[in-house]
Length: 344
DNA sequence: AACCCGGGGTG
DNA sequence: CACCCAGGGTT
Image 1 (cartoon, rainbow, N blue to C red):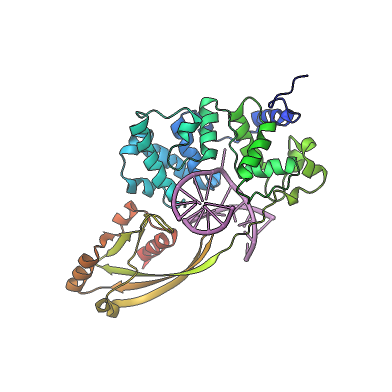
Image 2 (cartoon, rainbow, N blue to C red):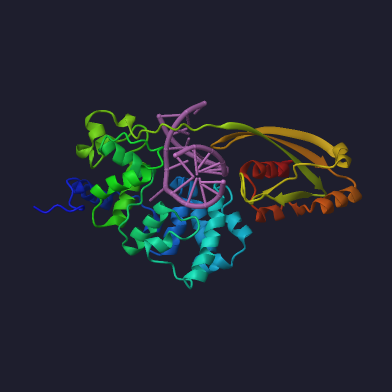
């Protein structure tokens, strides 16, 4: 009786998932390609992002940057513009750097080996496994939040997914289940996790592996996965000055630390001479995953060209207007403020 | 190993 | 309101 790592008693689970995937795969057009560039962009766009939320961004991005070379030769700010509103902006910065890595280190040819793909900026073990398996027949499970949920339920495993060892732990569980066709298996797990084995109210009646699911047979799917670490949010206040004159206003680019990396924003301070020009202030709130923002925007309508020039030049602000601001990427709440200003 | 990074959807 | 999402980087 042969007994290697791949002929586990649980292999039939992976095969059921494969055959389920064959009939029930979500109709996503990027599944029609094995172009590693497109799959890579796809994986980055949809990190921590639901398909419906990122689909337009993905399509527009691919249309503007259809290949590695086009992306590598683009300006970083234009890449950021195509990422506007998606969040986690370091993804855009890293994707751009990685495209230049591919041009410089791999002669513009997307690397085939998992270990090489892993060297690209912004590509971690999940993404390297996904691209490798989908495009090149790699044999690594693409372990993500779906894997955690599905596997912890099937095995009724209470391993804490907050634990930093969760990735390697569930990778080993995945190996027990994983069939030969790893690319389709990885995507099957994504679809099952998204459509059937959902975080709340999973559709176990429609699940192809409900016979194999310990959590289901025990009526305890809601207890998995176990996650001890709770999300904590803190309050943060931001104050901006919308300094404008003759339809123009002042902006600057943020650093690549803290939130909204390298996005554009309004001045956060003004000189004393500008204070008399404040005409109104708008206060609103904006929720981020780890922060509750309170944002105050003081509108400063400058009627003195001398003061405008002095302030603008001294602080090296960028002068823009409503039309030109469409070429820059602003944080969501500031984007909204600019849009509302058009109606005033 | 702990912490940080967005925006939108869900129950 | 808490939790989740085709995670990765930094410290």
